[in-house]
Image (tube, rainbow, N blue to C red; front, side, top):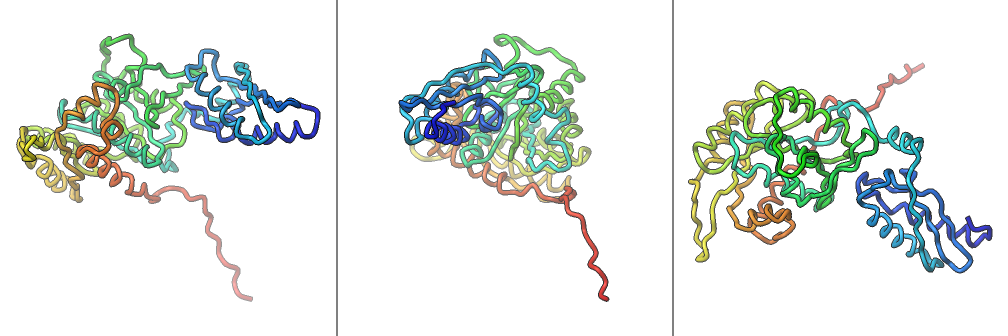
Length: 382
């Protein structure tokens, strides 16, 4: 620390400015995480900031250094900025974990206000994963804190759709999920080599989902989306057990056969007690160069599915939207850039944003949640 008063004053201002720098993985200010070890400002205005990384091989080291340099440089009176990088001691990491981690499933707790939505389908190939990542990115673009769990363990695809190639960062047993387009993402695909298949039975699938929910630090989220495997198997059951307050979004194509199969994915809610938020019809039509629409998969499947689920569940299940078939939607998936990011003015992106906003506008609700309020009885009149 500089010994002269002006240097101490500048150091305090620099430290205050660093509160605006967030750890790219934990999404918390580095000052709150104990990552700012020391700040000093020399007589010539050179600021030296010592930053402690959680692990020595932190993949986002350059991002942190650049953000610290930029923030410190905004302080009036500071000229050059030098960032010294160190690594937390085991004791400091333990203290960090103590403040972040819990072994319980945080999103399954009675007081959780995170909306948990499982994106389900009766069969594969209906665009469920593409829908999941685009809804997540649309919500994040609107300022929500969003996470995705790629719960389709055997058929994982979310990392590729989001363009994520980096592995999660580990702080001892705690896992920090990579972030893409403002969305925190975890998938078994981040832990396997290349395109190696995952060959697991039911108990292992349950354990994988449980570990994603307990060992991965998502922080506070407004929405958590789970890309579920097709059908009504082990993972769908595990989700209802681990996340009893979760809801379902059912995806189909206009094809009658696909809609009939999707009825089973939605009607599972009669046994799990989950709410079905609605139906999304994907690949609804293809706009031709002359402006006319072609319906390669037929029409009306989404509406029929919504009506059938409403009848089975005894509560209205709306058709939330119909997404057109666009080559750019497929291209975005291949390139790892969701269409709501790569082509925000497209018809598909507009429909996806509308669906995302409909889902986000529905309040989580306070029914059954502890409010921390103790009723008192007024003193009797004398």
